[in-house]
Length: 200
Image 1 (cartoon, rainbow, N blue to C red):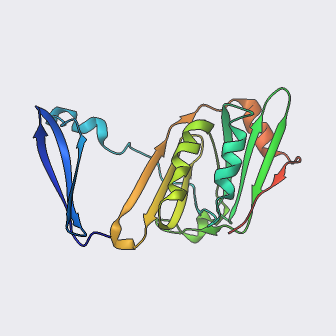
Image 2 (image 1 turned 90 degrees about the vertical axis):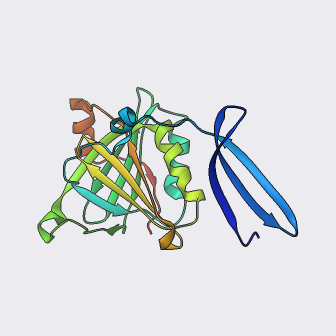
């Protein structure tokens, strides 16, 4: 473990780099990571998107069950649909001509930040690219305190990761959503079999 680590923005052969320098066991270590400097005119492209108020906020399970479910799902179908309820329930479903599979997660912890008791009856569904969601859920491999999934019905999916220790910061991922059709909505309202998911 290195006691001190410094970060510097510098240039190497005309290429902008972030230089990480540290010293461990009397050995100086430096690593350059090429970066592209952003123009002031490009700032707007990297701002967080405008969003409606979230309908459902759930703290995801500590275990990697959800990550494994999404990784398996992407081998069967390009897209997955997530149905969430503010009472602490969530389902992940994939639907193709050959197979319908639904995985359930119960006893999740509802997060009430910026919400009221009247929101406890809220439900929301979003359709997303399974590969993109699987990539985002690699955040399970980072040391963290909590992962919160926020759903805006048929509009937005946001995943907020509070790193550990808390003072380290927060990572926020905005996952693009795909327009749902009437069949997606009808199937979401019904019952049906599926695989059982893990609770927190």
